[in-house]
Every structure is written in structure tokens, then in C-alpha cells.
Image 1 (cartoon, one colour):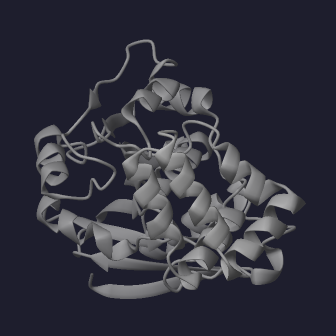
Image 2 (tube, rainbow, N blue to C red):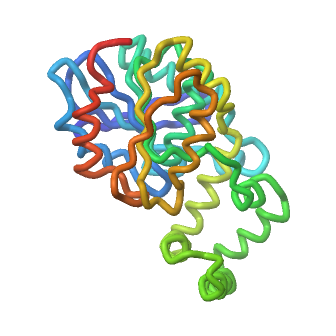
Amino acid sequence: MQQRNTITVADLQLEYFEMGTGKEVVLCLHGFGREASDFDIFQALLAPHQRLVAINLFAHGNSIFPKNRLSKEPLKASEWCELIRQLMSTLNITHFHLVGYSMGGRLAMVMMQLMPECIHSLTLIAPDGLKVNLLYRFVSETKLGRVMYRRIIQNPAWLLRAADVLKRMHILNEKLHRFVYVQLETQAKRQLVYDAWLAHRELFPNLRIVATNIQQYHTRLLLIFGAYDAIIPPRLASQLTRYFITKPRVHLPAAGHRLLNKETVQLIAHEQPWSGQP
């Protein structure tokens, strides 16, 4: 990434990076536990008139969500869109191409729901938000769930043992078992789960409205799911595509959840979602 900047609205600070100097913007939102620099790999896709702007979501990088708001006042969808509009003003743009990966895909769909007139194209890469995750809801939206998870932050041993038992019973597959261990292996990672989940817990899209807006505004849509993704399996694409009159194509590269790779770059280069305007 090249330039690092921040914008502030009220008590919220959002960090973003810019690559390239073109007028037309490709706005990218990363996944949970990842960072804006993941989109460096897209540099080869930029035309001379384009630049890539990648945002660090809250609890990541130097994007700051107030700790005192986590339990009682999470980020509102209107606040998120106001931050994006402030960013647009700072960048001196009125429209952009939007890319969302995993958790970033959920926030991208919220933007498609609330500010569709600003989005030239939407690229969703294994997007979260297609189905309610009961564990996420329990931890982020109930007092009991939050108390239990704060204890897990200090001592995750019992949860990891439970994951081992579920794996031996073939209830939890190998990929999900490994995912649990990776996300909980350090106290810093466990704290990140808590902070990120609570901060963004109200940002879930209405998929019917998202699909309606994509069709109404003739927004170019590119859907990419890993064929072997155990985190966000490709069958969940139907939760969105069922609302389309003409169902969009779902691309299924031979990969798991980690899709910011050369194969995805080649796929985007072939489909050219960022070329021209709708």
C-alpha cells in the first residue's frame, strides 16, 4: 500500500490506504482478522485512471471504535454509511466500485442496501452475512454470551477441548476445527473476536433489498465463492441469488476460504467488473 490516512466522524476513526493515482476508485473491505494490505494483490488489475482504496475495519489496524460503546451502542448502519460518504468527500468522488471479502462482504452489502446510487459494481468474495450465525448472535447480542466470552478471552482451554470432542464425533470438520484454533490461539486474537463482533453486530444486510437494488440500479455483480470453503460454503450464495429475476452466475474457484490469491485476480481480470460504468 502507498498512502495511509484516516477520517474521523464523531467518535469514530477509520483508517484507509490508497494505491494508484487515478480518479476512479475501487473501494475494498477486508475480512475478519485480516487487513487492508491484503488487497495489494489487486494492484495488477488497476487501469491508469483507477486507484484502489482499502479500508481497515474497526478493531483492525488504526481504525478505532470506542471501547465504551461495545456492549451498549454498536456501530449503526447509518454511521457506517456516513463514514463512507465522508471518505467519498475526502477523495472527491461520487461513485466507486466496491469489493468485499468475508466480513467485508457483509458491510459491502449493507452499503448496497443503503447507498446503491454510489456503487458502480459490486464484487463479493465469500461474503459473510448470508445466513444468521447463532454463535455470533449469542456472543454479541446477549449479556450471558458476552460474559462467557470474556472468560474465554482469559482461559480458552475448555472451549478448545470441546472443539476437539466435536471433531472426534465428526460434528466439526477438520477445516472448522483448525479455524477455531487459529482464531483463539492467543489472547490478542480472542480479544479481536470480541471487539470486532460487538462493534459490527448490527451491520447485517436485508438480502432482498440488496438484490432489488442491484437489479434496479443495474449494478454489475461478481460473486466468488471457494468451492471447498467450510467457513462460508458456496451453497449460501442462494440466500442472495434467489431474489434475482435472472440469477447471477456464481464463480467457484477450486479453493477454500482464502480467496485473495492469484486465481481470484485472474478471474476478476477476465470478468472485468471494474471496466466502464453500468
